[in-house]
Length: 451
Image 1 (cartoon, one colour):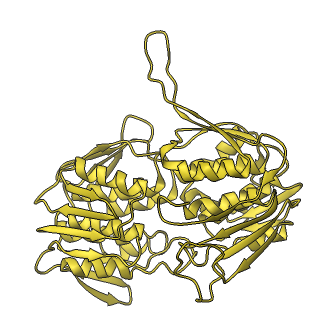
Image 2: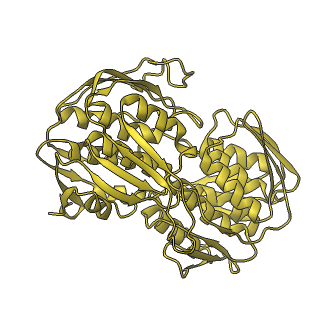
Image 3: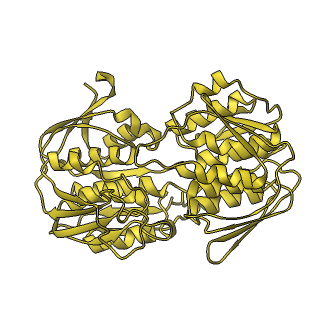
């Protein structure tokens, strides 16, 4: 495990500029969508992260030729020879990502059958695939559970349906979209997720020839079409990574400019960031012209000095405060005066990372009660899903073991903010969602090294 550890010398404010590329939560889904086309697709600004490698490998196993384009971060997908992959080959990727479940609809359309291995991802709650399987059955798929995974078929083809999600699950909404676009007839999805990454996936599918209407009140209507073609797309930037660096700037009393960050997709985060006492400035992009090289837009985040203020926040589906934003921000909240309250309503087991923060000197108590007014699925179900953070706390160095992707980045932020030298184990997990994070840390003046 010695090659999967980062030594972090804390106490230095992060200062400088980094850039975020396409959103992890869109790029991998757009890659899967390429399976549906009858001609090549081209995707730009693809980050070099582990999830992209997994999807690229799975596409290759199914006969999709994936090549690097001329531009850095450009991938080209040729789905001309889609074929079945053996269960042994697919099982190589078992447990490394949850993306394989989204191959179901496209593979059923292209091949008439699909195999899904055991699914991985971060351990932040069960995140059952029941919503996915129920939706696929509604379209006419049959699902057979075997020891090695799930075998799906569509003996009578896939047909449009009316379907209401019990909860606006992002993954299940993506499943419905990727399946409905070529299902015969009209599909109506109620209580759909409407995150920016979902809307961007709809843009990808519309470019391919899909007919999708986004109505009010979380209703999406999809009219099935007999065929789709390839797309050319530049994805929205990663708002989770942008917020993570913003929280790192705040926790270390630094100043970080995040090129590519977009205000519109981060409005809820920016409101909380300002309420805590952080400052930011949005820079709009300026196209190049004669005598002017132009400028890439982004957002500058900094700690203005003085004390940070405590806040009460609740995570929620879009347009609420994103669950992936709370872990990095909580590190900054350990430096705020007073009691901050965080009510996690999306994932029931997402506060386990706070134990490590307490070992570094933070004062965080977790509760089973719903400490907030947002309707919550976890009330009275014995999950510790609310936290009270008392601050400010002086953080000190510690040995940390990363449990999941977002908690991992929060542990890294805590080590950067703490006095002394910490050892952070399992840092390669951060590569699942943060491109070149060690190089970016170096660009921001952090003192980190591999032992």
